[in-house]
Image (cartoon, rainbow, N blue to C red):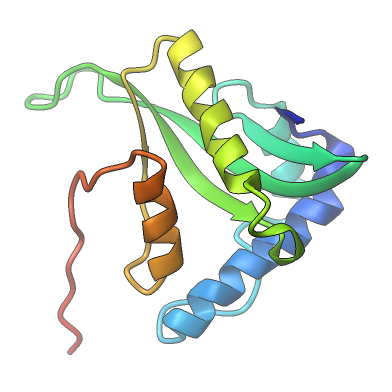
Length: 153
C-alpha cells in the first residue's frame, strides 16, 4: 500500500534517509558526509505540506520505502514555459525490501498522483555514482533531461 507519510513514520524515514545517504557517501565521500538530509523536526514540517507530499510504501504496518516530492513551477520566468512539475527530491527502498518492486510501486504512485493533479511531468536528479538508481529510473520510463558536469580542482 502507498500512502502519505504520517508523523509516526518519522523514525523509519530517518533510517531510510541514512541508507540512501550512505550510498551517496560511498560513491562521493568528497561531497557527502554521513548523516540524514532532514532532521526529525524538519520531517514533521514536511509531512504537513500538501504541495510537497511524502509518500511511503507500507506492508503489514512496516514502512519499506518513501518518495519525497516537491511541486515546482517557473511562473514569470523569461525563458522557461509555465509548466507544473512534480520533482522527486528523494526516493529510497529499505535495503531489506529491495527486489520486491517497492520502488516501482512508489514511482507508479507518484506518476498517477502527478497525472491526477495535472502536473506536466515528473522529474528527478540522480547522482552519476549511483548506477543502480539510474538503471531503475530508466526501466521505469525516465529519460535524461539535463546533465550536471564538474571539473575537480
